[in-house]
Length: 348
Image (tube, rainbow, N blue to C red; front, top):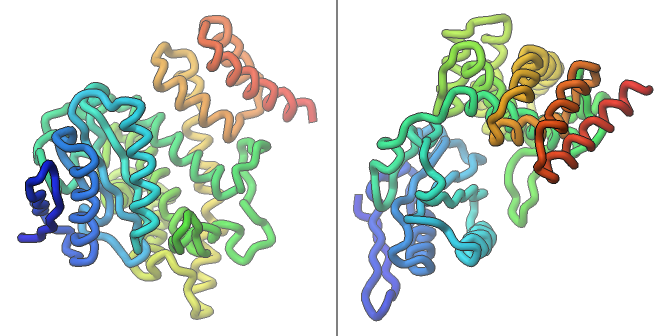
């Protein structure tokens, strides 16, 4: 393809030409602008740009986010990190779609996620992620579980009193509160819709694929289809239906026809049981992770437990052992908060 813009860099013309198209002219034009802005701000610092997710694999719908990974040479400085945060804010202010831009640097990149390997390279080095081994499966499990728990927590208003088993976000709502995050309307605000609900379901399937099958997947569609064909349990039809109706057919919007609204309500009614199914089958894995010595996995686990607790004595005991064996003050403070949360629930 031949998509170009021009600017000035040291008196020379800066030209950006995308190496691959997303298949959407407006998105390609937006990407050219973003690459141009970053190249002008960080000359000779960026190794490559990659589109991750639905715009990278051709499954985007009008309400989809645009996910971009930017890989820097060497280590990002604190000043550069602040500049990246500023650029994300300003680019989102100009964009007609929500941008999720991640800045990575080579010094911290020794493994690649499945989504990185599935990314569409659009400028710079095309092979950066392909040369890296996949992250260890235990990292994938605990990181995906954390993201699923994070979505559960956000849907419930980031409440600090959430425990397993979960209850509906809004028991009196037509869609039980699962419709609170939909189309991006700008300024960091979202309208009603089911975008976050789809993210939750596909992150849960990604977690179970890794936990049960030892498989890592790079896209939402690959996640639900792997679950449907390979896990093939009582939830297989449900997860495929959620993906096909909520994303592919309704484009994350709340449907208007009565039959469709009833179908959506039925999906939402079942989702609470799928959430608790995931939390139940991951229970022993979380305890095992607490007993391990991997600090990154431990941090993801503690972050998950701080959002959704398991009120039981075995978790209190496991957390006490981690506290005794760990001299990191931040981790100890986090363990104290989680333990107090469990004790408070058990005392009720």
